[in-house]
Image 1 (tube, rainbow, N blue to C red):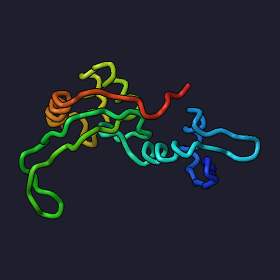
Image 2: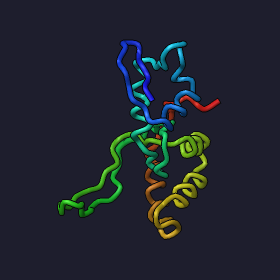
Image 3: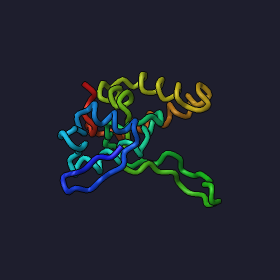
Length: 149
């Protein structure tokens, strides 16, 4: 699908993304073309190319402000080097995970993360440690994509 911003620049948007953004009121039809505000083009790329840092869902609807913290003191990376594994800055969140954070539902967030993890319940102890560190460094959350009507 093609959308045109305020400067006349054409953007190709996947049908699923187009439908979601149209439902949220970010894309509209002006009688001739589908339009999007120029400032929203960066947002739709960010929210649809990113995945939730908890459950890997799309689109990203929330941005959690989290201070950087060390996840593991020493880890061997795929290129062979060893060093600390650090979470730097904010966390991207889907609609469901962001709502759980906004409601301070820590158990609900952990349960959702575990249910979506590749190894499921086997990951609960590791994810519980990660969540404790997340909540220790969590500052706030803000919606970055309008909620569906």
